[in-house]
Image 1 (tube, rainbow, N blue to C red):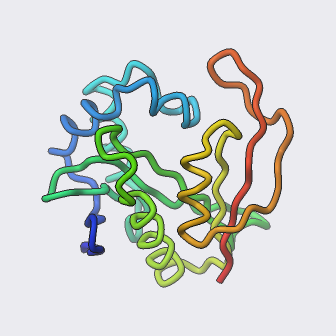
Image 2 (cartoon, rainbow, N blue to C red; image 1 turned 180 degrees about the vertical axis):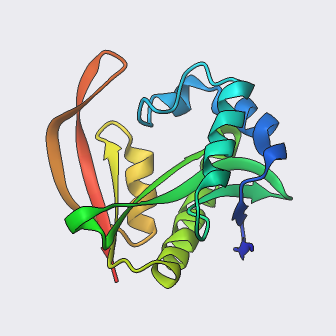
Length: 171
């Protein structure tokens, strides 16, 4: 299964993605803009454990490699919520810094958004970004997500308290 765009291809993670994911993921600039589930430094062992967990997840893939010429240059996923939020998914993504500013992650987000609405019984996909991450906010807006609100002082990252900007798209 591949989702082909003009700039990138999304495909399920593979065991041999470990080296590129570890190499690109071991970057403080990426770590600054993701949750603390993403360690820093990011080691080959972290990449292998991450890939193994994702490959064990039953059902259609929810975590996909963002690839250029079949090399993983980032990761994008939709995490399905549960309970009363069972019709909502949360989108998350990161892209290796050498590939920033090319429109790749915007396209990847559009592709996984369409895939998620076609594949899962959801009506909403949401994503949060730290207020300091203007580039990721622009990605969400260009991909068709709407700013729904600001959660004031919602996150603590790198010794700083910051607001979260909450974006969403609905079916």
